[in-house]
Length: 106
Ligand code: FES
Image 1 (cartoon, rainbow, N blue to C red):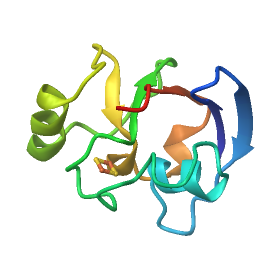
Image 2 (tube, protein in one colour):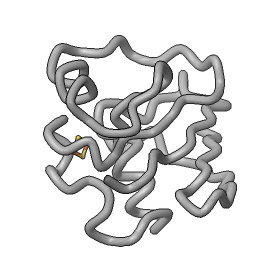
Image 3 (tube, rainbow, N blue to C red):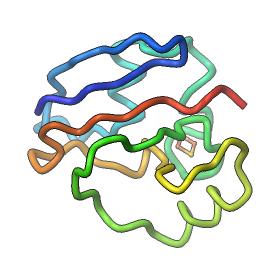
């Protein structure tokens, strides 16, 4: 699925993320090395660190936020209305055209 990710330096990366590997958006950012090791996915995708926070720029329909994601975002820094935790967004064909920007490191 085609996804656009703007990294923390403002560089745009257009990538094709695999939908058959049970990955989430945070893992894609890590596997494409779009953020330095140790600055994203710190909690391992448990919705407990917010290091994978990103801003959703496209109007792509995403899975609804669960309580743990909502709770983490209520405590995190740099949160905006369009903030989501990348680790809570599974890579599915529905994400075609998704555009996100990584939130600053906190
Ligand atoms: Fe920690 Fe997503 S990796 S909240």
